[in-house]
Amino acid sequence: MILPNQRNTLLEILLKAGYSVKEFTIDDQPLPISGFLQWSITHNKYNYAFSIEEDNDYPFRIRLKPAKSSTSELGYMNYFSEIPSHFERWLKYLQREIDAEEKYQDILNEDEYIQFDSEIPDEKFSPDELKLLHAKLDMLNEKFNQLQLPIEHANKLASDIAYLKEKAEKSSKIDWKNLFVGLFVSTLAQMLLPQETLTSIKEIINSFIRRLLN
Image 1 (cartoon, helix red, strand yellow):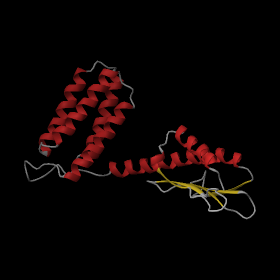
Image 2 (cartoon, rainbow, N blue to C red; image 1 turned 90 degrees about the vertical axis):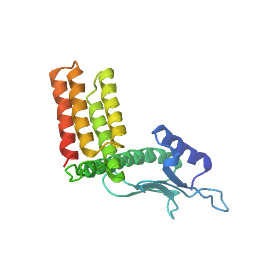
Image 3 (cartoon, rainbow, N blue to C red; image 1 turned 60 degrees about the vertical axis):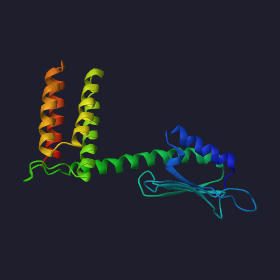
Image 4 (cartoon, rainbow, N blue to C red; image 1 turned 135 degrees about the vertical axis):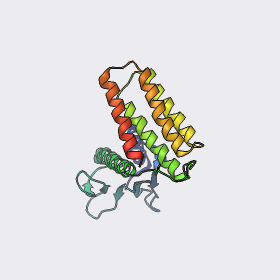
């Protein structure tokens, strides 16, 4: 199995890849006689893992989950120096799957609607609807950021979104809907941007309205 300094080598790779140790559960209990470690690291949220296991024929057996094109992969090593490159490879596969999981959640969220056509004139957002609304407004801001707008325009749109989040806490659904439309009409009218960029912003806003307002 591995020694403490070898474990630390892998954790340094983890940190350099941009992860926090707190994102993972690490099992590195030393064996009672040799002091070597049986070592595994598991992502807390998605349960993907990298482990170094005992093997009868090789000093090291590693298990990657996920792998390049399958759910898991086994590897057999004679020397610990062979393992770090496989750990780096696993971290890349892990990030790929995390991105895919989050994209899937975004797709699911985009199919959720808030009912604005109500017989109750002053109906307010429920706690669940507020949570959904905030998530969708965050996604809207991300799409604005992808346009790489001048900083003053990006800040204005981010400020508008923050204001809309705040107003949603107390406004009725109908008042908030009218505020949303009026606010962005006013903001776009004041922006000195190429027509192509303005059109892109309008398309993003219109897509948001279609996906949110039922």
